[in-house]
Length: 284
Image (cartoon, rainbow, N blue to C red):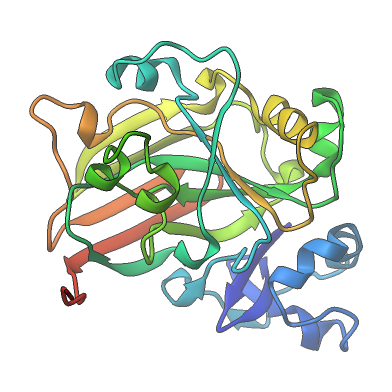
């Protein structure tokens, strides 16, 4: 099953088109895309009986398939090659930070560049479908609704400012967490622990890797987090990025006005972000 958000309404993606869930279910399910995750097993059972789309689906008009998660987790240094290019050692436990939900955006967007150095980080995003508290890694996939494509855009100057890193703020500017175009359930993916992912800027490949190279797998991350916090339906986890980020290059490379960033994960979909000058005005 694939679910998406178009004009704030929950859509089921079927045969290259879509079905409006609220209308097709005669109101059994809400039109609210975020509300789907609280009843995800029921939704999946109902969706099994839907055979044909009744309207087109255009990812360029879609919003984030998870528009208002209660919690947004992100994992740093989860690929050994990215840790190495960052000049840091491979972590012994997941490096966890958060992103603020106000940074979430859909799959095809225009991003206003804030002052500083904005970098790209393509990531697999996990969407929780069932509350998880103190579960084991073996139980983790049973609590996952599905997977989607994400970009953990990062403003490196703010990130590295001050006596301690400012990960949360530096990665939470408006539009810095694009996701989509849909959430894909694990049963539709042949090898959910081994997906090819990458990104390119203006057609030039910048990152390319496989999720099998994550230091901590999806199941390990979900189990680890659940032993510390309660994971709720609709929460999301950005699982980390492979090597090839701009900060790790010599000389460093960052995003500029007019750049087009395309990010993709095989079997799931792609994102497109176009960058423009900031519309913010400096204030004393």
